[in-house]
Length: 205
Image (cartoon, helix red, strand yellow):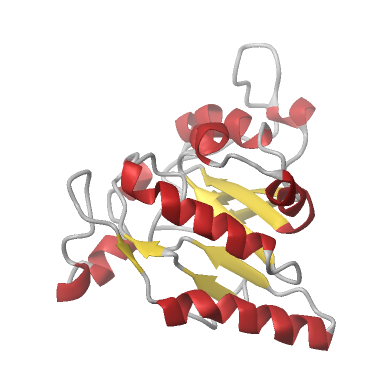
């Protein structure tokens, strides 16, 4: 984990490994497929799996990226959680999430991208002190996966309630048509009228 092969970010950072499938977009999960074959990560998946924190050396990398960014006068994007979901509700992740908050607060020259299938968990799982609240507004982008219209209807309103520098959508794997212009989540208000979506990423399965 470090310099990313994902074209829209400079770096990828995973604070821990492992997740539980949340919806149909997880059916062919690349993370479980690729990392589940490796003995050290094979038992990290599903509700009974053990989430495994990545190494301290890995946790130090963002500090180096932050120093380099400050020196170069650039703002690289960091995708956080390509092999986990930082808003998965599990007791064993509570202290690690606090550590992740502190890391993000301490690296203000990086734009952190937190992508989740569980945006409704944000308010309960990301308690903000003053520094954390400032980080969210200045250098944290929060996004959610919307693989079909049902996921869009359920997740986008929760996403837009999260205070963040930017809100984005990952429409991948795109399992069906997704209408972001006229879709209505409560029968009266459309995503268009809500506003607040800054970026949409699309891709097949």
